[in-house]
Length: 205
Image (tube, rainbow, N blue to C red; front, side, top):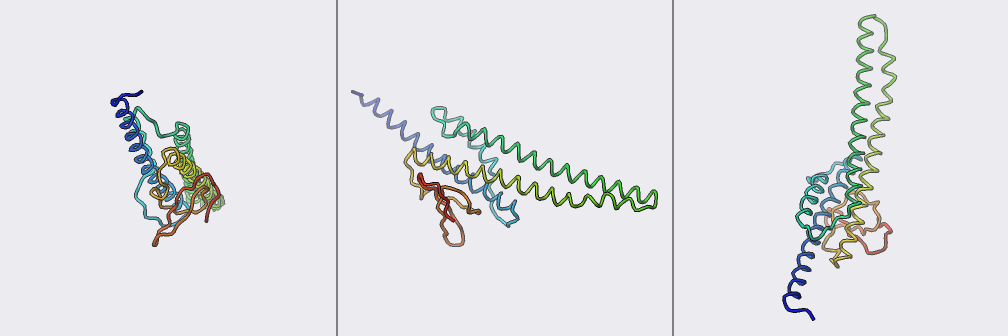
């Protein structure tokens, strides 16, 4: 049989784990809302949301390192997050580089037109449709990454709440896009919130 000290230690350990689980869930709902807000902004919507999801995740990792007895974050999820951040930076850099090259091409055409008094500018102007292509490429590539990250964190939140028997209703999060799986959408006042559902992963729109 366990003595009173062992029982007390186990109870304290459970309380510590429960506290960290709740703290992690609160961080996750902020991260989900922040990523989804960025996705909505990328789609052209006017969204007023202040949290920086990338910074929130880094803070969560740093905070998690202090809780050496328990790791609430799936290492695979963090690897995916890091890769997605790299992919999004690559997309943004490709977009900027593409615009810079088109701008340089047009500037060259203007220079040649001035020097030779001939319409050399017409050649680089033909590249302007590429600007629309780059804008569309950036918008859709980032949208996919934002969507995948948001869905991954929603799934992770569901597992955390289930594992530690936390009430889903207490961890509702503000949402701006309604195409995620495994959530129930609720309108409260002028805002839209989502609550993760149990095992049913059908989306509610």
